Image 1 (tube, rainbow, N blue to C red):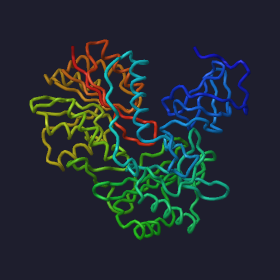
Image 2: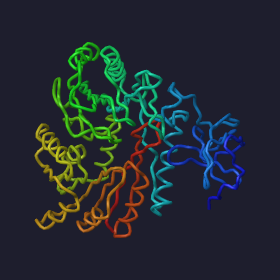
Image 3: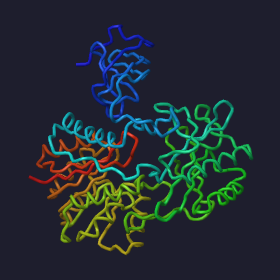
Image 4: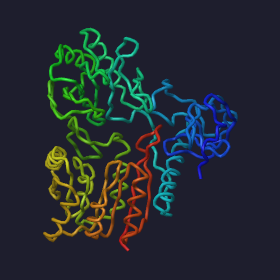
Amino acid sequence: MTRRNNGSLKVGSEHKVIIEKMAHEGQGIAKINGMTVFVENSIIGETCLVKIEKAKKDYAIGKVVKILEASPFRVAPVCRSKQCGGCNLSHMSYEGQLIFKREKVIDSLKRIGRIDAEVYDTLGMKTPYHYRNKTQHPVGVKNNRIVIGFFEKRTHNIVEIDDCLLQDPVVDKVINTVKSWMLRYDIPAYDEIAHRGLLRHVVTRVGFKTGEIMVVLVTNGREVPHVEELVKMLLENVPVLKSFVINVNTKKTNVIMGDENITLYGRPFIYDYIADIKYRISPSSFFQVNPIQVEVLYDKALEYAELTGSETVLDLYCGIGTITLFLARRAKKVYGIEVVPEAISDAKYNAEMNGIHNVEFIQGAAEVVMPEMAEKGIKADVIVVDPPRRGCDEKTLDAIIKASPDRIVYVSCNPATLARDLRYLEDRGYKTEKVQPVDMFPHTSHVETVVLMSRL
């Protein structure tokens, strides 16, 4: 039981602590007089001198003043930014990161799901840098200067970034070009508090195998002055530019993208491959951020599906058909179900473009579509789910149980909701067989997991 702050933890006070374990977001956890203290940039097993920055009733937040006894996994961070929260594990060796992510999955399964399944070692990258194919850079003003970068952790303060070790180096050229254009033509940055100004975000998408670049300006209005000049500047500095889009978002909201896209140069999409399958990617399409590791992830999902060529498969939350088309190479028939109409349109196009004809994409909510399919006599041998971070809702899980597939392959980006959903399925006749973490986001605390469940 967490002890309440009895007044001994004063803001500004310093304490010698031992980091006993790691929180799921990557902070170290220590105890001071029974109180839980979260310590950024610390590693399990370290002895640190910690300064208390916040003291709440039930916990405190501390900052490392000095490492007294370092972990064998501690390394010097390669990122020069000390404020950006993107690489929150960069002080830990890559080996240590992979161990932490496996332990994170194990903890969630046991603590939340009461599931004691074997969790395999995390599958990592050979070169864990420059892996992001999509970036979203907020634009603002700081000290009377235009800044384009990333938000500081847990704030909307923009940290200016000249180069980022997680994104493709071509993105640095895009950002520097946009900043030069803003300065040259006096383009106002967006002020999210006053809801004034024009340029809100710069979004980039990179085709890792095709080399194609998409640049999206998210603007607070449809009229963008001197935009033709920006296109010329981008083509000079980024010759592989294939798509330049204005995304209009005039709402006072934290949601980055608006509903309207205006293509001003090239195509309204780019192409890229996962393995030998080609995909069309639009400004708002969901496409896995790490195209190198996504092949590892999907190969594992395909392995767990245990397809022989005679199975009927349902792919829930199918998006633009990324996993669906992978599965179709080994299955008799695959149905992709997705609630977003634009994603279904892209999925159908991707299937046709690749000459894959044993797939069918259906727009709608899974809990509605699946009973309709059952009424038509369609029986699923395998169901694959790849939901958003919030996991599956109970209606979807109930629909899966009623469909009674032999196997469920669950792909998750959130160990907590994964554990919750596995518990629900285990209580209703399924057994967790295999659990494989995959590192899709090196140097961050995020982890993807592929799980095989079998019907008892």
